[in-house]
Image (cartoon, rainbow, N blue to C red):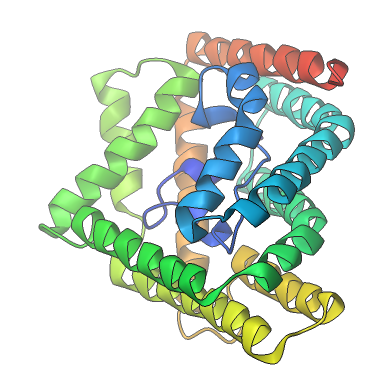
Length: 302
């Protein structure tokens, strides 16, 4: 079943695994918003604002950065959206049968693969941006990372374990309710138990987050210091992207990450298994609405 599992809280959330330098995940945005067409049609502007907030683009960068974003969205609209229709149609078929944890793992791997495809497509443009950054922009990037980390600490490292579990459960339920509608108190009790069974160590997620941020800073500092060529910079950016999609195999926290993935997939499977026919019909209808939106967006080649 093709749930937007990157939005379900795994630290935090699986989206932490997809955060990287200058990237906004453009794929499988399904459960993040109620109006795909509205969000997608303004996605280029949102991505530009996102980049600008991190590095404070100067007047010389703005025009070509906007042009690069426009090209990326044009490519994405022309080549990726029909693919998402197939993903959602497969989800509808799975919902009518018996979904297994292996199915969900395959869907999660598919989301990562599609995310990698999009970001790798942007790698040459990201390399151009990295090569154009000035020392004050790198300082702004570092400052933005520090600010984000302060916000993370306030949200995910404060309060008791029970408070953090409750917050994680609340964020997951927002996604489940978007898909399935309202749940009964009995269902919520089962979901809460499965949610709390997930490993909870937000310090590990913060450490991983900061490791990747430091890798980003090292990359742009190296590019600036050594005046790297476009080709050499693209190679570094591609390596950073791959590292951001999947934790390193030699990570000291690999067991924690693997257990988190497994238990989150079990949480999703639990919700599917206890969903009523009416709730599954709600999910099917939600997916059909997104299918229609993607077809419309793909046909609108503006």
